[in-house]
Image (tube, rainbow, N blue to C red):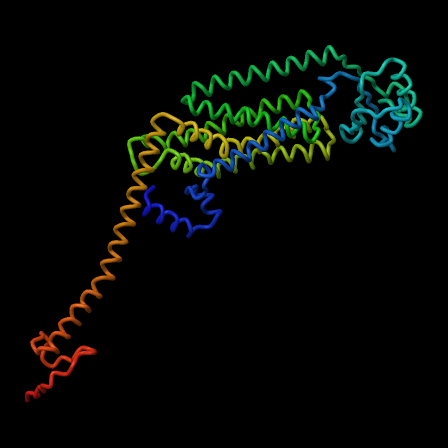
Length: 407
């Protein structure tokens, strides 16, 4: 964009409010131009995520880690804190998790612990029955109302292997689709955005201690599909805006890509807001009101992943694409040519403006100097070109002649 166009553009942008520019996508937000800031911000997210995964690890659910699951009806005065106290007093250590699931008459307290042997299971079952006297479906107090399920570590390892295999296959298929759908540089940027989203989402799970369950893995696969969709939308706009840009010398590839990011920014915000509203509804209604704790893992990973995905597609993928393009190839040469041309025109314009100002300032001085010189010469020898009836110049000597008025 040349200097005049840039000034007109900035003047036009100053007339519009922030939300108006955001809604119309007029390119008023510098995204690509501030890519170093977004790279540092993205790097900070990745470092925190990787450090949390390395130090804290993941809180694996019973389906992955194996263990024992004890469940009893949540009727009467049965609460999670009381059940936890009974568990600790009986076995001498804390359970892994204690949560309430279901609602109404189907509400239950679910305890997850490390694998218990038969003696520990019998003692815990007896202690819970004596403390709460849970009733079975017929309304009679029954020890069998307390159910115990054992998940072996072997079965949990098989589930973990299958979940990781599904994740790897999905990522590979996604990378193949991206490589076919986009050109090489766009494919690299989209795959980078995909891995960025996976690492940061997993890091947040590790950092806050969310339990990793099969539902969480399913939610992560769903989020990767959403990130792919968002990248397709953004890169389609970049491809549309930059088509034929190498044959012109007015705009660079980066400026056109920045405009595309602005034009899709509001769409990404709208898509994300609309997408997370039912997820928030799932958390509020299903988890807090109905007590369906199994939906919490699915909802949380989708909520985190959609927000991170919206950020990565605009503020990471597009700047990364421009950086790759400007490293080498025709885009790098075109960008250099446009900037050099723009710099040369700017210098010529400054030089011309300086020359014009010097000329305007010099002309009155020249006229005054010439007039003063003529007046001084006329005052000395009387032969000056001073007009008849004109007043003498300041500082000139009187000639001694008087001019009579003509009637």
